[in-house]
Length: 274
Image 1 (tube, helix red, strand yellow):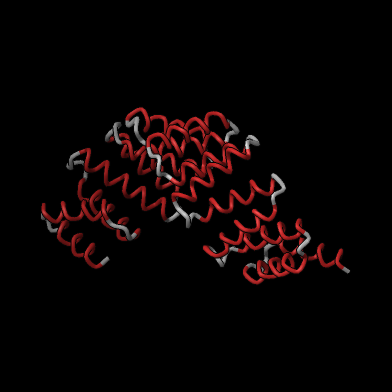
Image 2 (cartoon, rainbow, N blue to C red):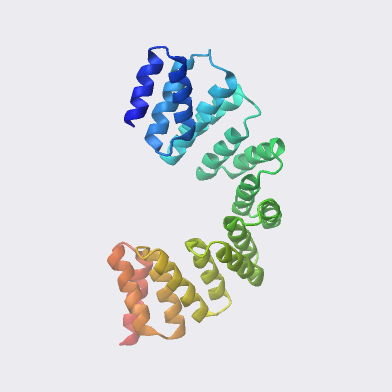
């Protein structure tokens, strides 16, 4: 952050090299608030004089920073400005779509993702993200088609397999869903969400021992996740492993005393065990 402040001082003094350095900081910075500060300085200094492509890039990157901070409205505003400056700015459409998705404006997100794909037909992440938005709207076949396209472009994308698995599970194609979750985990054995989703699919098939095994792997990866303990507790309960279920519900409540499902499940289990 100190380096960013030095660059801002330099750019305000009129140095062109400082401007270039600050733009680089805006684009490359991994620290969110540093990115926000440097991008804001670039935008303030440009004052309509900078190259429209570079200014658009600065707006997109500031939009990315706002997104990371959870300020989706500001992210959308910055990405919209970037698009006005450069209608071909693929990342502006993609970034705006991510914020629209978080605001549950799924159809608008799909529209932006379609525009991103039109401008970059091999944009695997845009296909994958559009597939998730289609599933949110209940359009499972469109979702599956988009995830399949993402996988064809990027066959080592664990997230795309997991997302297609979710679309298959949504329409009850549990074997296909499990195949995709398994492929996702072959690519990334530490992918917690894939274990969680595969366990849920196993439960829908009544394969509770396999569900317990996956929830156990999830807990190894995310030991502070109360929902993982609740779900494993439910699976244990289905298997008749009452002591293990009680222990998991209690652990979930230790991690989150407000976990309603754990509290209600534990209460019901102790009542029937008397």
